[in-house]
Image (cartoon, rainbow, N blue to C red; front, side, top):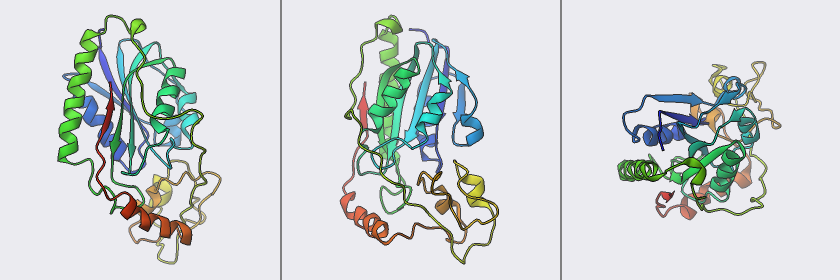
Length: 260
């Protein structure tokens, strides 16, 4: 199978999924890598077509065992042409549930042929004490080896039409989507607007930066992580207790899972 272009595609509100996808893309060899960042609403609204000689490396974060709630919007404007694709999900060292299977199914529905999948641990977006600074050097070595294994697989694929389906973890019907916990601002807010600028779903209005539209928010934590004064947080007591407990639940290091 001949590959003439490598394209990395990602939704990455906190930057880690972007980092992971691009590490895999760069490991594919001396290709010029095209990057498509689907984090903004404007980017997701662009219709995109991918070709048969293009290797697509597609990454999304996991929220509560599923893909982000806007994944339907993402795939609405994406169309392949028997395009080979690598499905990657990043998650915060607890579980990735049905997310990888969900991503694989969405790519197939968009006329992609999924040649591989990976679930890669990343620092938790709502608690930096969980999987701190991951992916780390140990992960990077595994990612580099993973890219080499994919290159070898591509060499041995005669035609994309005869490619055998790969198995990834997950169940269908997928795990039910959980309600999002909504971050809000407090009196430490200096109205700098970084939360609004970085929100991937436009859930924060300029008229009041402290409020969040609960119908739009996907709970990605971007507004919390970019706030320079610590004004934004999820203040639900039950959630605060859970996220603290998660430090113990997800304490044991989980390793990257590859499916080739």
